[in-house]
Image (cartoon, rainbow, N blue to C red; front, side):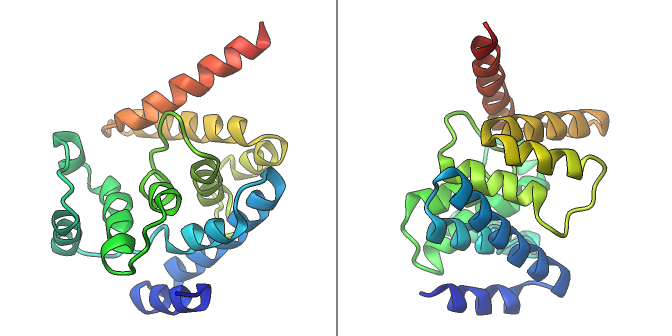
Length: 192
């Protein structure tokens, strides 16, 4: 499929604001991919499709996840905010026949991050935080950090996520802690 065909699919699946967000993430992903040397075509596709199941109902999420043979952990089952990344990665495989592991993983981990993130994982994670439609407190700081270094932007994004979820007393994915700890340790080593 072409980018244009994927665009048509998300336009049909998503409401206007979410569709606009997906287009903005794809655009930012392309910019970051060019800046940091990631595959630009994969970045555009993953950015465009990262929220493909964001507006699905519980039944669709569970059906897509089940058909892909994915078993949710207890924490994942009790965390609906995580479902769209998991079902989205499954959906692009089962419904769109995407078999590129980098694209699938970038969609799967765009919300939580993880340890040992690929360059594409990082690009999509940061693009989702910094796309043109984002207007949360601290977004300008995040954009500046993203322009100086991708790892620092991922670390900042994970720190933001952990603090936000902890403040709201919401479960935090173990992948987020693992990714944060790995990057924080690397940053600490580089300062020595």
